Image 1 (cartoon, rainbow, N blue to C red):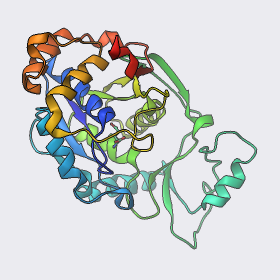
Image 2 (image 1 turned 45 degrees about the vertical axis):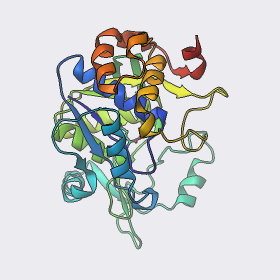
Image 3 (image 1 turned 45 degrees about the horizontal axis):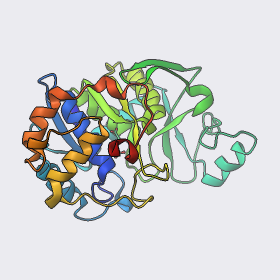
Image 4 (image 1 turned 60 degrees about the vertical axis):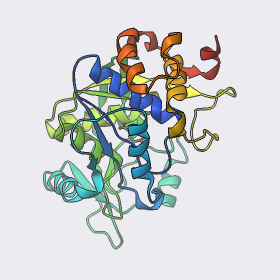
Length: 296
Ligand code: GLU
């Protein structure tokens, strides 16, 4: 059971379509299920209509998902309840640190995101608080299906991390982990830029006593200048009307050359052929895939 879990902060560009496609292939190749979840827990970053547009693009590309789409914004009470029980169990604590306090405490170190534990023992707070999960001496090791053995020392990399934000909305880490458990996700297929997040997710799964899915971290797609394809680097939204030709491009990124008789076919036809032709191992150990490789 795999999933595609976009945040509705814009339209789908090639990088998203590639993540969705590989998660879809991973499920189809093993006669599993492919689920779609909209991670809409950051209202200021959301663009009205983006979620519907994303779903329309998935449909145009024949990436059919199993069952209903899940919207995280409809599951807020559940995330808050888990954070509350972690607080009550002493595994989490309230944190009222401001950005400038954190910046100051971090000045000595290079890791801007490391939390120096300031609120661990602060008894009362006179302003809004986030909730942080405690990280005590913690090295997370796991075997990534594409990137091999990984090891991250959370005590020095992140320290205690936020699971509920000051605006009472869940942090990405909490919502994602709880939903992956709730919907029985067995294989998480996503970009290599989330490797550190995965170490946090495995830590959180252990704290919750939940099973860890298998992880496959995909190389990122980069443009000719070597930049990650994203809205910021000018990646264009995929044109739903051009799905058949974009499908050929996506397969090329995955190292699969479309046979001439399938060029111009509906994505559905292309996928049912390509799911057999594609070997996920061809991505093993790769961190980036460039546009140039599909020109060869
Ligand atoms: N909403 C996250 C994103 O769009 C999903 C990451 C994940 O697959 O866990 O980056």
